[in-house]
Image (tube, rainbow, N blue to C red; front, side):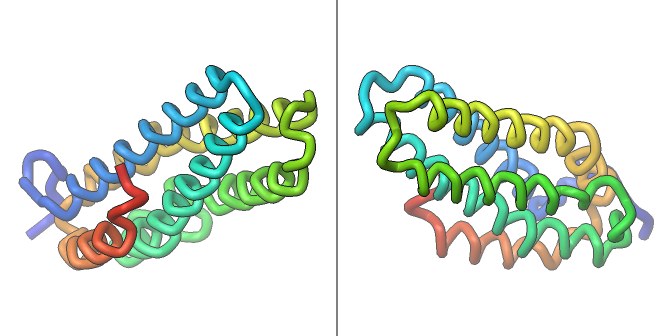
Length: 163
């Protein structure tokens, strides 16, 4: 049986993985919007804390489940575009670390600038995934049967933090 499109194959693990990724992307985008609307230091701190957790979970989902499944299916390798997100993950982690060090200066321009830079890195990463990773996952739908249990475990372990 050859590769079938994720949507036409009815493969729940593939569509479940895509839905989970897209749902988490939407949640992260909302958190960035919430930051822009935060009225005080406490509000900003709360949003950045939630962003840190959401991005950590998102990176775990990709590096622990999605990328290994893509590599196992032959859909990506170290050189192939869909699994090149590790650099963006690293940049985001560095910026989150910077934000945590700036906690005493939440009301400073440096803090807002770091959040803005984090948003740019994350949006670039999401955009790249929408162009490469997600279409590749859709094309490789039949190769994701083993991922279903991993996604179910991930959801169960992180149920309180997921959308």
